[in-house]
Length: 516
Image 1 (cartoon, rainbow, N blue to C red):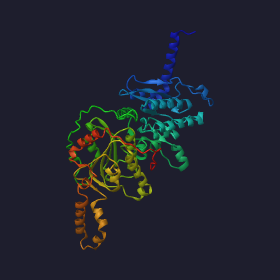
Image 2: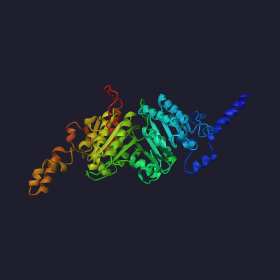
Image 3: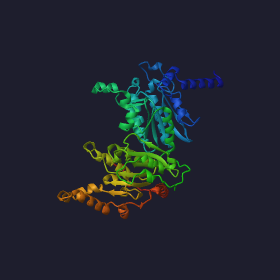
Image 4: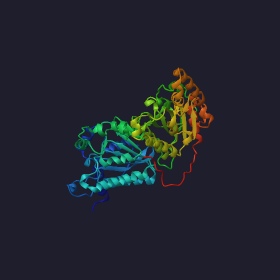
């Protein structure tokens, strides 16, 4: 019979073996420029904060030689730790074991940690680096994914869910990241696709690489699956930590506030230089955001996808805010299908986690075009409209220059429920631009005029004076105040302060029918 000391020694030896991994597989992982799953956890979490669960779990599968290959941990590490002192639950695939492929035991470990995250009200972070379902385990592996997907949906809007793609993620495995709130990817090493390049070529004849089909750039710029793209794992994991500091632990808490060194009433003198008075001249909306937020620091989501709209998390007077802003540098800031979807998802995410919304408006309308209409710009634009109308968090709108047509309404106008609306003194709020309006209203007069250009100029000026002067909306209660641009930060900060105790009672219903 073993002594207690011998039992403890055997236990420690078993744990060391379970945690060390195959040295050759570790070397191969490093040769690809990738960290191991435990190295990733060390980078992600506060030092010494990680507590592992089910270290010694082993699969029970038989057949295809699986009886002889039963490594402890079964290819995934699960547990909890801390980021800046706040509890988070994590799981991390181990590509060195079965290529990170998911089997029944592997899935049950992830499901357990998901249940704990939901029941304790703490964020869930998944470090994904796996080859999909474990083929040797058949349908039980697929059922394992189903259990994960169901938990993703159940926890949606309850706790923040973050997926970090650090290797391959193929087939049905791709759906779990797609169901989470934020997806991070690394260029050159992370891939996501339902069918890989070989299948694509066999079925369609198209030849394409993994990177071009489902790499970080493809998902960061074209599909919109990835919200964040990085050149290496280290910078990626650093920004995961930063994102967590901007989010509440769950939907019953407020986002974490910090003491602000940047005065709430700081004048933003540069705003008058950044934004041209001429309504058709472009500028970088990111520079405007940088002037308004604390220390010029903000985290942009989906930076390279639908760049005609900017969505970012930041702080104003120490409080976390979600910023939605048209980007005049791209498509003149017009809304289109991709921009509407991007902003709608961001608005709903902020609303789910009690993050106030600040909307900066400089929009000429929705992007015209046959492709836009046939691909459903009406339906997709309605998603953004629905998201704003449904949001119950404090909502502040600032109109910088122009706000035309349906796009003005959709960008959180007073008529759809924003709490405070401000406008700069050069604002133009109208159904359309003055020249277009004059051409429509006075089409017959212009066609019959001996000098249509002179008449058009006079009619445009008259329309502007009557319906587009800077105080027209304010006179009708659609704008609360026309403000000095340099006071924009102060106006937003004061509004958010007074709205902090906002409470909305919604009608009883199972759920709305979002125009998906």
